Amino acid sequence: MRKPAFYYEKMGALGVHIQLLRSGIREICIPNHGEFEKEDLGYIDREARKHGFCTMLITFNRIRKNGSKFKSYQRIIYLKKRRADAYLLRSRIQKKPKEKSDHRVIGRLLGYSKEAINSFVG
Image 1: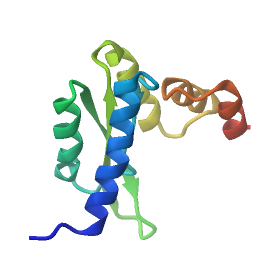
Image 2 (image 1 turned 120 degrees about the vertical axis):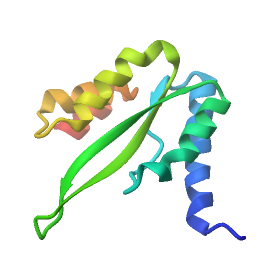
Image 3 (image 1 turned 45 degrees about the vertical axis):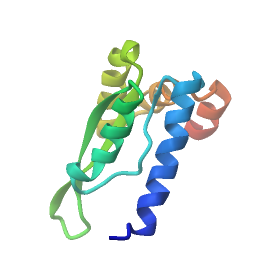
């Protein structure tokens, strides 16, 4: 059975993040935009573990325009030594509402420069 094009796009994006982790450019990252089903993130777990990295699930409680509730999911990939930072990252990402300080912590944990963070936060 032929895989859909988006599968290769996801795997390509994941491959870039795995390479950033393997080369030491990053020690923690979030390689996907989110899924509606946890099981759809299995490819991240498999690939991360194959390269010796850990993963952590992020769960978002969301509300549609019509008021109905739903969840979406992402995964953090990180080096084992950054487990505490992965927990902190997850808690700040899931926090609602976020303050500027939360965005600064998220940016720092993901390895962005102070200039990039300041540009984003304003």
